[in-house]
Length: 314
Ligand SMILES: O=P(O)(O)OC[C@H]1O[C@@H](O)[C@H](O)[C@@H](O)[C@@H]1O
Image (cartoon, rainbow, N blue to C red):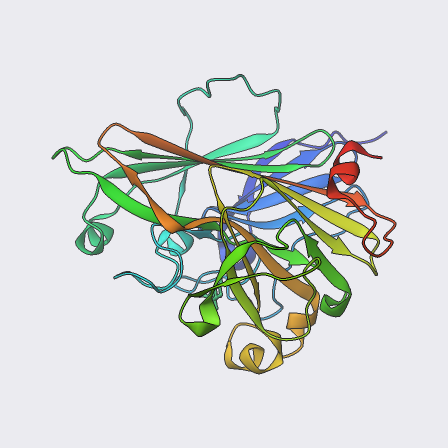
């Protein structure tokens, strides 16, 4: 007799931190830590992990967790007055038991709603009142969906601005066998050159050294093809015009304390983001940013794989 899988379970994770486990179908699953409101695991129906998590990740405040999908808010990167990537990734989020309804009814039943509100300490550095609601959902075919709703609740009539990213760490077999499609010929800001602006040349993007680029005004669908694994990640995004692509490569990897020296070979960050133009909300206004990830088998032929076809199963 098979024991029924609990769809949404709140339990203890590493170092006793609270986590929520979502389960769908035979073996699809995802895990979300309340610390950081961070997805730390996403598995397919073979139980294979699809997100990268460093073996040296520190699941202990105040360090953010190195891997999964950290949330960068209210500041992406180091441009601004706040700590790198903002504070949302190292705050304790709460389970939101009574979130306002979504305008269109969700067909997904397997989800968790989290909420982040500013603490007194946060308000000293970023003097704004807001509600950040995050829904993490797992679809019937294993798709992972994150929806952020950020509302300005400033009582003093003041607007605020922020930048944002879903800092997704994909797990890949070998970075030198990976290509990203959907960003070719776009303009990007090079983070390694003080955000100087360039235009991407040529074909799909491949990797042979450190990369840290913010692609601008990107399409809503981007594909990450893992040749060796014969797997393609398809990212769809909404409300997030930019896409950050990051791999630290060998030298930078050694300088990151919570990252193994060789781990750069097995990860790639492709981050749905709003960086170039910050988002401004007046009191009472709400912004929505959505990320949808699916992992599909791919038989890869150089230049012939059209992410569109992958999406349609063709
Ligand atoms: O080490 P952190 O703060 O998690 O940041 C990792 C990387 O995150 C990327 O999004 C940035 O573009 C990089 O510049 C940065 O190095």
